[in-house]
Image (tube, rainbow, N blue to C red; front, side, top):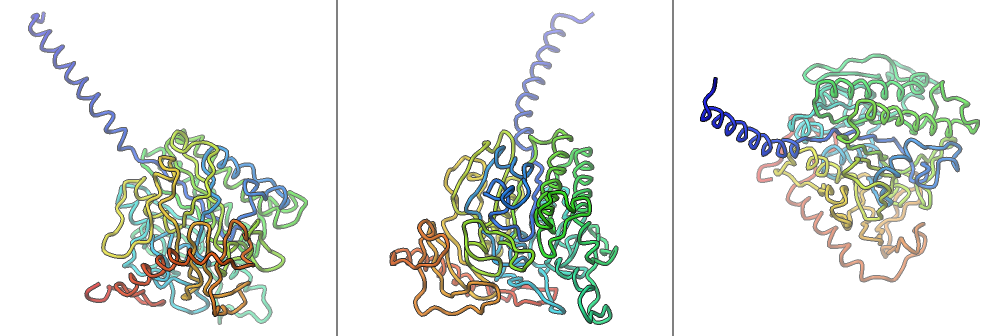
Length: 476
């Protein structure tokens, strides 16, 4: 039988333990990092989704994607770079692609991809303790050493380049000996990637279903293991050829484009259902966006909504994209903002949210938008940015104004240097057709350009096709 003093000592110890646990628990809870499900569509124009005026007006409702808007944040002024590879590069590195030798879509036989010197968001999140995966389109290097599993992702599945290559085998005079078909591939960190099969038109219809299936399986494994994950779902739709999965052919009765929208919405729905079913919705930040503006080629024309232009141009239709974010309890439902943001900001923002580190040994263009994203600030951390198309500085955007140095109406028009730059007020001229005389705005715009150009002097861009190993010049 214990003595009274013994009981008092035990009680004191228990109270102390409970007090200690009470002190530790909030700290542990504060350190819990969210899962991140980042969904990137390929060439999805601003006006395609129901939440942005599309959906049924494009032949197919998009209720599952639209639910992200009603349950979270919708940005109406999210911007990307003008082409697929540059946008993916800036998302991946937090650096405008002109810095990284990834400023244009590579065509047949051209050396391409991110050097190993670049630090990707996959690497940053992996170092922070996240399980990482990329499923879908990569477009930042197509050989071992420059594939996703070499750039911070624990696993990957998809295509190393782009979807229009699936049309090659149906082209007149095509020879696989001269130009082998792109392969669907998979790989794991620390191992060479392997080719699974040719990426032809038949596989083009099937790939997003497989991307979705594998992404769901990855989230299931990590939820079971209790490990935070960074799941980068890089859909191939609606990039040309915009052909729906066989299960969706004829589903809407409104043609391939509408059937594709229905398929995309269903695939995103499967991803959201998995998050809900796994009981991790409150612990998961979901983001849906596009890499640039819409398709330009018939019969697969996309729609940029109120904006003019398509990808490969500096017009709003080429750079302004949908952006939806959901995180229950963290992001207010139904919030809408027209504040400027840019895809390059995703690196610093996701790094902050996930407790990852942003490199300090190189220029980083990414701005931490976590306070803005989470509603702690109604104001974006960004007021403007330079707009490059390939290696040409086409324009600069600041608040609701834009300064064009070149004119280019479509991707096939050569950029024409303007004798006098066009000043556009996007509030009164969203189609960028009539210059204004608000010349005072040139001052902050040229300040943006000057500051950026100064960093290029101090840290020269990496030339496209630079092999590994790359090291910056001495003194930089």
